[in-house]
Image (cartoon, rainbow, N blue to C red; front, side, top):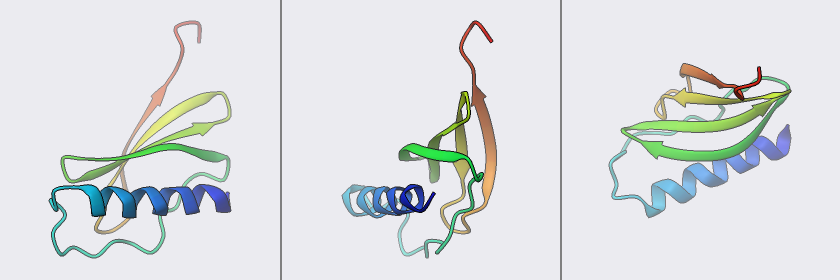
Length: 83
C-alpha cells in the first residue's frame, strides 16, 4: 500500500513537471485515499483531472481525482467480457 502511494505521488510530480503547466499554481493534496486493496498501475493528468488506474482484487478500476483536493470525483470499474 505504501509503495502505491509513493508511486502515485512520484507520477504526479513527474507529470506536473513535464506538462505544459495547465495546473498552474494550484496546490496538490498531501494524501489521496485509495481502497485498502488497491494497487496503482498508472497515473495520467487529463483535462485538469488525475486519472489513476488501479487493480482491486480481480478488476481494474479507473479513478478520476481532483488534483487540487485529492477527492475521488468518479470511478469506472473495468471488467473483462467474461465477467
